[in-house]
Image (cartoon, rainbow, N blue to C red):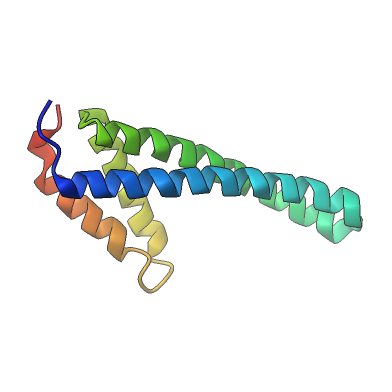
Amino acid sequence: MAKRPMGVTIIAVIGIIFAILGILGSIASLGIFTLIPTMVGGAEFTILGALMMPIMALSLIISIISLLGFYWLLQMKKNGWTLTIVLQIISIFTGLLTLVGWIIPLIIVIYLWMKKGLFK
């Protein structure tokens, strides 16, 4: 295994932290959007819950995949590099909806691309 650069370690550890927070947030949101319609009632809350459930489920799946990718990145595995690059490119495109949401994923892609040869 190649020696892991400090930048890869920083990206992977911060990514793991955010992936865990994403998992916890998605689970909490799924619970909230499940309970609100039953507690408050009303058609508008039922519709909101029905609309948000698939989005939160997708968020949970992406967070789990991200956790796996960052863990593999920490281990300097090629599949971790590939998965992280793909997820960061997706983040760049979704981040274009905001003013600066694409900058950090772009920096991560550029940095990891420069270190591509270290991943086996």
